[in-house]
Amino acid sequence: MAKKKRKKKDLSTILMTVLMIAGWYVMMFPKSADLLNRIYNQNTILSYNNTMARYSDEEIEVMLENCKKYNNAIYEEQQTTQFRYRGPTATDSVYKSLPTKSSEIGTLRIPSIDVNVGIVHGTTDNELQSEAGHLYGTSLPVDGENVHAVIAAHSALSTAKLFTDLGKVKKDDTFYITVLNQEYEYKVVDINVVLPTEEAPYEQIEEGKNYVTLYTCTPYGVNTHRLLVKGKLAGSTKVEGEDGGFSLREYADIIKNSSIFALIILAPFILMLVYSIKMKHEKESRKKQISKQTDKRKERDSI
Image 1 (cartoon, helix red, strand yellow):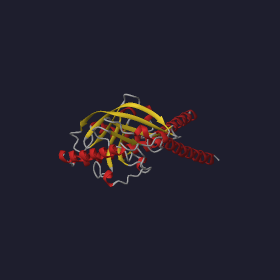
Image 2: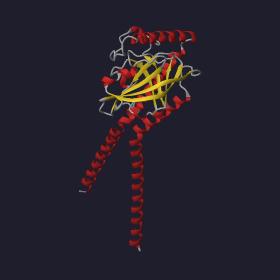
Image 3: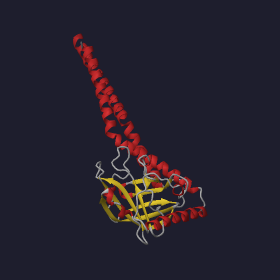
Image 4: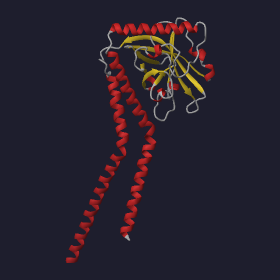
């Protein structure tokens, strides 16, 4: 009878443990998926840096001039027609070859909401699952006048944070875009929430200005409107000394994200190990206590 009770108790303990571990992983899935996406983007940035490191200053200069020619063509087009959405898929072979033939245009960093992602050509759903996308038909994010680039990313994904916190960005905050070994700094000057049918004027090029607008769906999980965070070019810095690798900040991010992800995966097993060691220790203590009590009883009986 006692053996049956013990067996039933052991089965209940195993079932409870399995349910607790499953519950832990369900609860931590969004966090762990976002961490994996961050690690993926850090590898993307490393790949982009490695690609850029292969080019000479002269080659970079030619690529930059090609980007400016493309931007001028976009500006000239908007002199006769208002900005028009060309769809999520980039069909222009010239556009897809800029700045380089890589799928990556550059990288985007928003310190105030801890975003650091690659920027790809186009805004198809597949492209926006893990990175930011450049809106086809808008300027490329480089220096010069008559420029207005639009960078889009998803929000409220269960697998990646991306632009989920874009609504927390405030006026005068800064964000940074790196293209062709130049890191461009943008200061937020305007924030708007509009219907999809109302967004075109907010993405129009303004004479003599250089803007980048960050774009995502809002409200969270409803997505009936569009959040547009507009930044004005405030300056640029040449990216040097990284030899295609990471800066110390990026190395620190990799270590932090990898460590947190490993902890999420291993936490239940560490707790189980600690619990089993504790239970074993308590069992041994009880055995010793019972043994002592038995010995004392034997001593009393022998007197």
